Image (cartoon, rainbow, N blue to C red):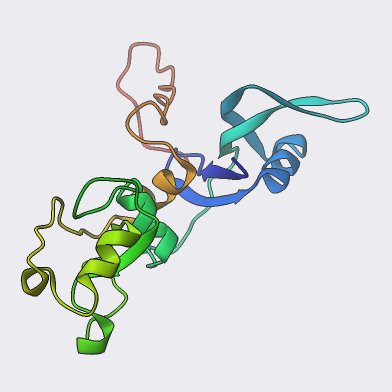
Length: 177
């Protein structure tokens, strides 16, 4: 609940920020609230703002191209929706498909969410050696997908349709620079 997704003016995900930073951006007029948490508001002496879940910057920010999402244990749990890759129950740990002791690394394609029981049962073996079948295969999320899922949102519900420019019935021309 404490993280807010920041969208660029073009509706592409940029980063996640703290609730405090999101409210400051909105109050400074640098961002607008695209999606608020229902029923929650932040109140000050002379201002009241809905608790933002997603904000969009008012001005476009050019960012360098990010080819890969950074790996993290939390990211793996979020990617797998906190479901064990072996039994489907609630996952609390991250399991290395190829154990680190056998050359496995911390990467999106070598880690899955697992419950503590299955992680302990698999131990220092591969799933085949332990006789365990994986219900889902690991995959590498795009940087944008990783940010969106870290905030707890998914699907088209997140991104509103950007407004189309009013061209008066004429085809749109080139964008101004």
